[in-house]
Image 1 (cartoon, rainbow, N blue to C red):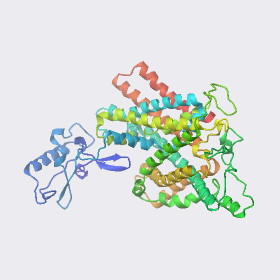
Image 2 (image 1 turned 120 degrees about the vertical axis):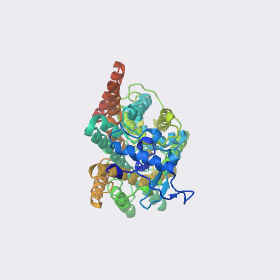
Image 3 (image 1 turned 30 degrees about the vertical axis):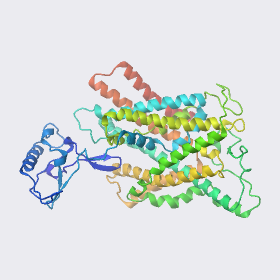
Image 4 (image 1 turned 90 degrees about the horizontal axis):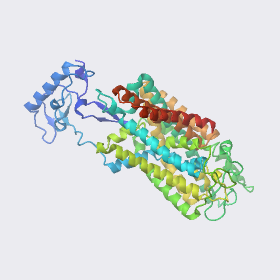
Length: 552
């Protein structure tokens, strides 16, 4: 009788939504009473053939429990999707759309969905990472990291297919980790997935503080007709580029320093500077705006604005193109020696770029869900590869143009900031529009990230997405508090991105995909020495990537 209480349709988790699984092996059978069917013909009764079919399936379901697949109903017994109905206790039945009627996307939509998902805040730090590695080495590392992360993502996508005798149609990568490594795999994948999400939220808080500060500063200076052209250290001319910290090559030691200017004795300007500080007041002002949004039960309202991410990235690409065209290219190749205005082509600080790129190419924890909506499943590998190619070309385009067009020898290439928008003055109208776009986009995405964190943490710890207001309140205080502290004391998004990227990438990008593949090959007796050496190298690479962030 226990089986009778189970639903006909198994619940399949797709991202944060739940869809009905209409795969033959995922259907649950129960007795169909002769009742009216709500469809095109409301008075139509269940046919005798359908009733016999239901009784037959009901008989199979009595033979075994749901965990025993030996006596599960064979596929030819399961009625086709067009004959499946959900029956209510009132006797009416509603027709269910089968998998052919489910929402499926063509390849082009799937490719751009992956591109849009990966295009995050990391794009702002790519020029900084190339500067830290050196121009030539930076390009080589970007291409190499793209290929390696693509292969590991491919291994994640194929991981569910390597498990025999188990229906994995509704599995995600944490389920695969649990299958191979037990509770350790489940909790470690959850924890490191949280690192990527919380790290992204911290970066968002730092960037929103930055964008809100510069946006407010632009508006205040425009209203009061204050000319800031001579207050920042930078180039002259219509296309100004500034160096916020001209006296140091290591910006991390000066991250708490704000852009200062002489107020000329204007008391109102001095008051504005005191109450509109990028590190002292703006991070606190954001609490009033964003903290209430995190406590919403549902994030569906904010999901409507996800298209702004695509618009922001397209605008950034256009902005970078325009700036590069107007500034021109400024390159000199010094392979190992460091000059006053140019950096070597090969630098020992290159692990900073690998850490940034690990997060920039990170989509491994949700790639299975994204590819389920692909209309042509046989093209999954091709579409994934094209998506990674598109992402890599976008990063390469932005990184190379910003680095190459940075005006040297007037300014040293070492002045390129972790957020390359900081190299343009707040009075730049085109950059002001970009900051405003990104500020509004991040304001809508931040609650979505908080919702994802809440769902994953609360469902695992308390078994409910919203166990209570107090539980959600405490979690949100921790998340917001971490963002405020980092925005105040260490607002260096380059370091935050590379540490969070290397940390979550250790397990979800390198270790778990490589280990799972080797274990599955070993169990089938197909593991060869070359495969073992290569995948062991991937594990060592992930560990080295994380450790290197500490020493550079």
